[in-house]
Image 1 (cartoon, rainbow, N blue to C red):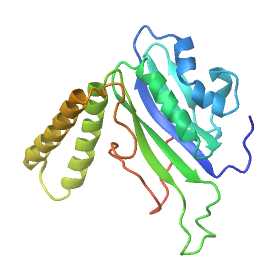
Image 2: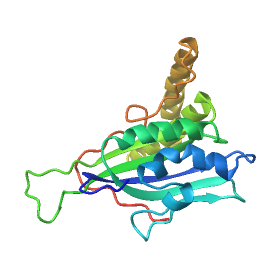
Image 3: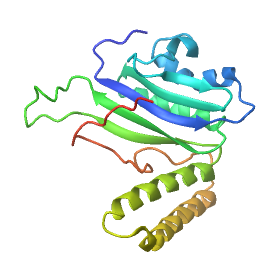
Image 4: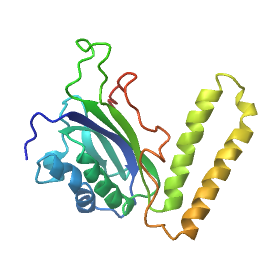
Length: 210
């Protein structure tokens, strides 16, 4: 279906390592929520981004790698498509991977907007993986990377071992709680579990062009 006057331009960016036995048909089915949302009848038809300079959705068969740098016009209901896509990719992923999603306010103009205007941009990281442990591993790695990058402005990297240990303890505690509550089928992801958190205002996140 065609989408006109949609409030957002939604950019999906990430690379997901796939199992060696995964077929194109399986990838197409897992990504059906995306290409169907874009109004297409197949992955091939919907793989192109709304912006020609972006590579769109590509499957690198020799490397068993799904690559996404894809923009589609849409609304808040796109989050449901993302949830469904993550469920599908969990079944195909070889290891944990982050998928960055940015909602750009299509009506906001930085040059013409007044000081009181604020873009409704939103940034969130979704996580996919074959197991909750794999998802938590990539969450942990991103968080450690962000924290070290921030703290190295004030401390030497060799001084940050205790910080990394504290992060590892927090994730070990979360995983134990997940196991004990028998919620292994619901991997943690979204605004609360992402290292990027929710981004509102404060400048617009630049697009990735890889």
